[in-house]
Amino acid sequence: MLKNNINILLFFKSDIILKGLYGIINSLGIEPILIKNTEDFFDYPNLLGDVLIILPQNLYDENLSLIEKHFTSPKKVKYLFLNFKENKNNDLHIDDNTLTIEHKIKTIINSFTNNSQNQSIHELTTREIEVLKLIANGFTIKEIANKLIISSHTALSHRKNISEKTGIKTISGLTMYAVIKQIIAIKDINTENLK
View 1 (cartoon, rainbow, N blue to C red):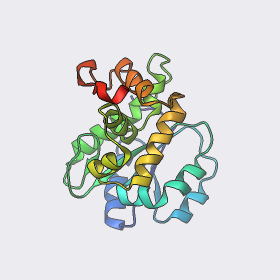
View 2: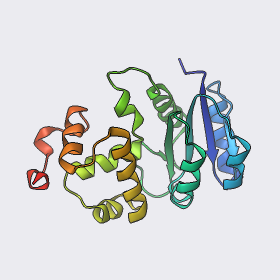
View 3: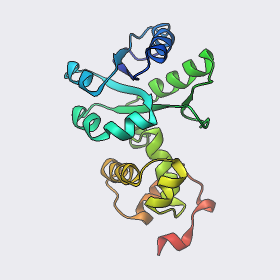
View 4: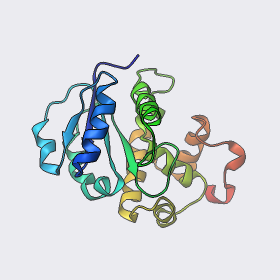
């Protein structure tokens, strides 16, 4: 059962991709909001409920500050990236079939939960969880950026968001958080990183 108070925003410049994803999401009983440029975000200032933004990584990187500024309320905002090159497990890929796309979208929609036991883990986006795993494994911001094929600025922004959401500033604290939340296994911790 999908939640009714979810807003899905599709942020793409391509009409073909917008129409294709619109059809898939609409078949799930949700009417997504189509965003073709950053100014379109201002047409939806008071969205109620949780927000899932589906967009390519490059549009996220280019518009991060605007998107974050627009969604400053306490609502939950998650991102699902469409990749055109490599096929990452949690992201959509341009070659994914309809069932795969539906499954990935339903998984994120269902992750919007108020279950207090898992609340803080669900506050982190898929990308933030990827960054947290790399931080816990001893990667620097520059190495994280290279590994995830994002800018250092974006990697640093994810790191700041993780610290704000968890209330943890130190690498050792974030590492322990990742272990407690079962994001990484204790055997995978780089102990040199904790000194």
